[in-house]
Image (tube, rainbow over all chains, first blue to last red; front, side):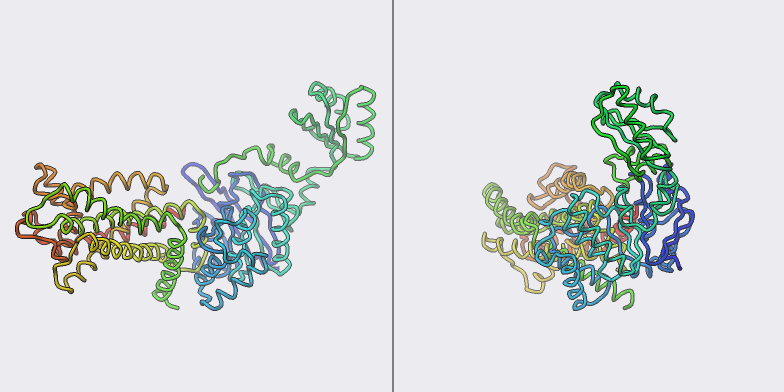
Length: 324
Length: 267
């Protein structure tokens, strides 16, 4: 299988800050790679390099067979990009926005209009087609922005945090649309802070931290790296957390996590069901009050913690990554 | 499609986009229609009733000044719109498209030029209503309007350059007002510069705004022998000096704005 996207050793520095520090990745044709990482990890910078917006200081990247630096001009006809900050004109209607993009792809006036109508229908925006985008909801804006990326039917698509800031329903509807695109054979590179989103949409996931890919694999492979199940106990008193940690130390296959605000202790265990029974027996014997107890598979949050030593949202700030 | 055709076609597409925006944005439209009318009426009646000039009505003397002043103010829309677009993702979208990069700035300046032409027409009509007259030949008058249009286009590139250097709409607005107010008032636009105190007079006579105002007055026939033209070279040769200024602004600021645009969007 050929790779639609290849990046090798990408470096991008802003002053002394390395936004990309030797980032490499490969996305086979027709698959989805999820680029997962916290704010400031280098996800947006990667997308900006791969979509020709930014020249890397070192390293090379080839997208759809074109070098992103040398063949930037020709590459642009073969990619679509939809960003974190919907790149649409507020004062233009949905239809006018898409027609403008079509004309800038040099499709011609007639074809641009026709393509705009097709996309509006497909994205369930026909009713809003002739209203200025200013009045659109957050979800509609993302849909029109994504539609803009699809005007020229590009074989490779870049989606930079496509659902950040959307409510769950709008997110689910966008996921369905992206899912359909992928079934149609489009290669997608998707960045996200949502572990659930990467799990749901991506064939493979690359975990990015400090401008480098620190782990790659399918969601299941990554979860396996972190080991087996977790016993998760929510208590009623913070004082009990320490007692339980010590009391159940024998069960743990790794370092238990304690969340003092949520009064929750999460213990990695080898033998799921049996461990949960043991834990509950211990709590009953010690008369520790429990609000909730359960067994769960490791999530990508656990993966992130295991790989980086910090939680995925630990660095989350309001600073936009592109400003960095 | 060759590079030139592409630049042209894309420039037209962006011009249309901006024209649509102007039509739908009430604040911009208000600036284009209301501002010139208010300027003409305010100055004609407030100052017009206070200021007496030898041999010429103040309204006739004033209108060319108002034309140039409005152009200086309206040209700031170019810069303001660019800073607003910079803060959104729209330039990123443009740059991932196979379009001519030059189209963004040419489209912006051309759509603003169309807007400026509209406001010049409105001002002219309001001016005629309040008593301004063109006393020159039709050819000279046409030249007068063309000169204003040229100035408007060249000055758009100046504000574009400033905007792309400053990048935020608020900062741009503050700086633009701070610079444009003295530029317009330290000139012969509203008052006879020869009556200003020494140093201010020198500034006013060499101020490019004065050059354009003087040239416009000459081409519309709004001058009078009772008010001799100051000896400063750009006022003695106002039309030539205006053309030179326009050429100079374009030669300096078109490449500068283009370079700053590239830098602003590739960060």
